[in-house]
Length: 173
Image (cartoon, rainbow, N blue to C red; front, side, top):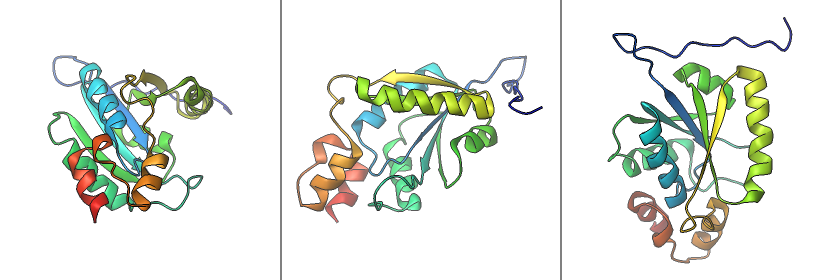
């Protein structure tokens, strides 16, 4: 019936063990050290983390294509086991369903992020039944925003201290 959602049982991996899969979606344009921290922390909480570079039509013209962002994610996260990347241009809840996510992970930098993220989390839960887990970034990364990094990089500023090496190399081009 209308408004209902289907609960998916988490996949099991042999001997009845439940596999917990987290989906960490974002525009990641560019991927930065705050994002990296959230993925590393999520990897400690879940059996698998799927990082999804998504096209966000509400944001300005992207600096990198989805394919370029996915490539940078792969390079930046190569040190983490059980983390994989996908590039998508559909609703996050569709991706969550496709990858069998038991949760959506979102990073929070400040209280101002929470208001928007809460609204999205509530919508995603209504659409799919998938819960959202918020992971606050450390104060060392709380001021880093992709929007600011794009602006600084476009004007020739140095953002290497705020992004993984794979991203810094592409920003220098």
